[in-house]
Each structure stands twice: as C-alpha cells, then as structure tokens.
Length: 407
Image (cartoon, rainbow, N blue to C red):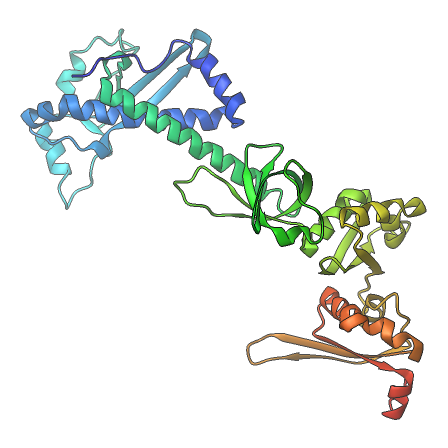
C-alpha cells in the first residue's frame, strides 16, 4: 500500500481564494471541481478498501453508487466529506432491490444495526434522532486514510476539473462578446497564418494573413479584431477557440459601435451593412430619437468620428446612408453618393425552395450612372447587399426614355 497523506490541506480556504484569483473563475466553479475530485478519489479508496468486505457481506460494491456530500464550515476553517448511504435492514433486501425488475438504490447500503451501534455524538447526530430503514446516513470520509492511488486520482481530477471550469468560464464570457472588439498581439508569423495572443486573457488564436489586407504585419504589433463566434473545441482541449476577423462587415459595425456612443447606447441602430474589404463599406443607420441625426452622429464634429473609423479600417472608404422603412426610399439612399431620379418595378418573388428574390429598377441622371454603378459594379453591389436586394438594375435617364419607361 502506498504512503497515506491528507489530501485536503489545512489552508484549504486560503488556497481556494488563490485559485479563484489565478484562474479567474468563481468560487462556485472551484468548489464544483473540488467536489468532483473528492468523489472520484473516494470511489478509488472505497473500491480498494471495501471490495472484499462487500463480497463477504453478500453484495458487490457498485462504484456508481458511491456518492459524496461535501460540507464547508469556513468560519471554523473545516472541510468535511461524507459518503451517502441508504440504511437497510439486511443486505438481502438491498440485493433484491438491485434486481432488474426492481428500482436500484442510488447509494451504498449500510445496516441499521451498524448505524445504531455508532456514537451519534461523534457523528454530529442529535441523540433524539431516530434512524430508520430507507433513510440516508452520512458516513464521514477520513482524508488521512486515502492511499497513493486515491491521492493521485484527487490531484488529477482536480486539475482537469479546474481546466474544464476555466474553459467553460471563458467560452461563456466570449460568447457574450460576440460582435465586440478585442485587442490582440501578434506573437508569431508563419507563412499565411498569424498567431495572436489576447491581452485580457491567456488565450491564443490565429487568423490568415489576408485579414490584414495591405497592412504591414510585425511580431509585437497590437490590433483590434471582432469576435465572430466561439467555436466548439475538442472536449480534451483546454483552449477556447475564437473566430476573429478584421476583414468582415462585422468588424466595420464593431468599429462604428466603438467610435459612435449613440450606436453603443442603442439610440442609433446599424440596420444593414456590406463591405468590399480594403476598398469600400456601406453602412445604413437609423435613429430612434428624432432629435438625433444618425448620419451626423456617425460623422462627428469636424468629421472626427468618421476619420477615426477610417483610420482603423486602414483608410477604407465608408458610405453612410439613412435607413428607411419605405422600400423606394431605402433603395435610393443606399446608392449614395449617386443621385437617383426614380425607383420603380420593385418585385419580390419566392422560389420553389422558399428563397425570397428581391429586385428593383432605378433611373439616374446620365452623369450619375457610372457613380451609381461604381467601378466594376462595386457601388451597386454593396448597395444591394446592404439592403438585401438580389439585383438593383440601374438605367440612365436616356436609357429609360429609349425603353419607353416613365419616371
């Protein structure tokens, strides 16, 4: 038999507070990991000590029935653990109940005669308490009796439990931050993969080199990223896997939120957006307060806010347009900075698969057509994506007249 050692330190509560600070998880999470470790270690110890005794008593020890309750008495700096047992008249009754056609006991059995022979006072049981068959009995666990195997199981289970709780805490924390910005430091550049370390937590992540566009990438540089999602990682992994981005339209929305307090507070909503990374973004905004101009708030005094946004986007052009619940107005606004003469033939069709196809025709002055369409169709494409139209057909006034369209 290995050397026996008390696995619960006398400075348990001091160690508990240290773990809470170090792991940045709650007391409840640490205690949960501790209780699971105690129960697992107790199973090991009782299996080793009681297996032969159980056979001689007439029942086989079922490890699944070993359940432990932990009692914390912090004022007295005491931690107690108890094996929960069911009081039985004899073991034959327990064995019968273990049969396939009868409900199983959830806990290990203990004879009523054995319980009655124990000193109630030493167990902390009121002397007037009447113990009966079918009731639960809490048998104290002596940590000092734990052998090497049980001690090893406790340590391993506690460490894995703390990692699990830490991972659960981080996943929950960052799930609540999806869509928000985080700052990360570049720690390694490996061909097309850039490895990152988040500043506020001991978390590493990675993104493709393309996320930086033409921006120079150097080890030690700090950059903002938007959290797209928290991916489910292997249960055996201690790492939390964050999907980060600088190239997405979600990054643009998050940068707006950071620089425009009215968006952060919810007074102004970003209703739609689109992006051609490195070239141009379109953002449709709407104010819930008639006294606050949504576009003006995003631009800021002396263009201070929009310039700060563009700097974070590495100089990318940004079109801000006013969102409208009137479809024709919305289409017209989305094509800014081009001027629109008319909007007509707005259609909405449903395919056999249930997909909605939305299209529209617009007429613009002849000298505005190239601006409305944009280089390689960029302005029209971003407008349709921002307002979720499948196609915006742009005609010059001359083309519309030639086709006999009245506008």
